[in-house]
Length: 476
Ligand SMILES: [Zn+2]
Image 1 (cartoon, rainbow, N blue to C red):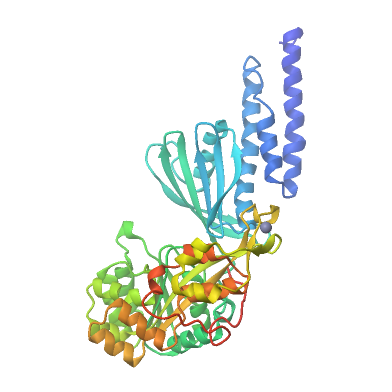
Image 2 (spheres, rainbow, N blue to C red; image 1 turned 120 degrees about the vertical axis):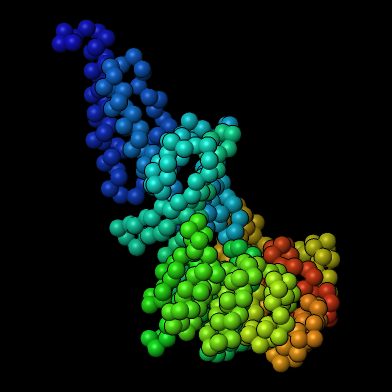
């Protein structure tokens, strides 16, 4: 070995080069934040050193390759936080490893990486989440906790799914910011806000917030809790998952794997002298029964249900086997909500109303005939989508005496809806149309996010400027 020939000389040259690399570009730059493109370029530009080099050199090269992957994964996570993504999809396909972020409710491709990186990236994520990296045949789930030097901190709930080209990873971003809002910040119009505030000011009863996953229910409920937080009261939550920490509130993570269901958590915390209870989600008869009972015995209960709108929620609870008299005595108020994407301010332009879309709006279309509407053309700022940021739509239904009577007499969903509209309720779609007329969002977006049947059984009650959306605050 000492007697260097031509061949060993070149191996030594290799070693020197890798040595330089470890102290120079990749490592040195890790002091400051690096761009995703930068790191990807770093990883992909160099093929591993030729395998006929000396073994120790190969090991060194492999370690070298590890470091950029670590950095790449961290950069993907930080980039997701920076862009406000709610989910990260890492998808192995035959020709590429795709990285997509869900931003404002829609997926966007962020990067397409060479498939050879799949294994390294997946393994790195599994290590971070303390999953079994050798097990690639069955789905696993866990959590990555990121604690930055700066304010950036977040949890990523991770799940793996074995697919034909490798394990697909999806991470839900559980941000620590954004959740400590007050009700004044959620973007609810004053009239509806007042109804909600009255409902949660009561010492007992149930307030339900409904809508599909990702419609901002948690933000609304956390804001209620923040507003209700009081040293003289005891507040509890049962959640799956706990989406953010709230000061001075006892939060319990539901864990069905060990038998800690919503029902059993509720039963346990009712023995803990609660005043206000947030039940993350009512999914079954047991949970709704306990929640109803709690609401009728001097506790304020806040919860969510997966229903389309406020009126349909009554039928959903009845279908779960709850007696009508319990609903009419326990329920204070029901909120339905959606998030619609806002037109990107950087590429906003006047648009024509598509007659077909207008037709699908039915009676509400009348109020839009002469309105000037807008759309986003698509630009770099919005990733070509034409949308940037989101805005909530609310439908708020207080349980008036008339409604309670109607529920007792077995009123249908459309009867319930008709009564609440006569009492002044703005429907989700009406709230959406109001935003369209104000150039905040598009008809297509409102049509996609709200349900038609909410509108068809009564005349349109769209009184612009009165009551409804007086303030167009930011939300998201
Ligand atoms: Zn744009």
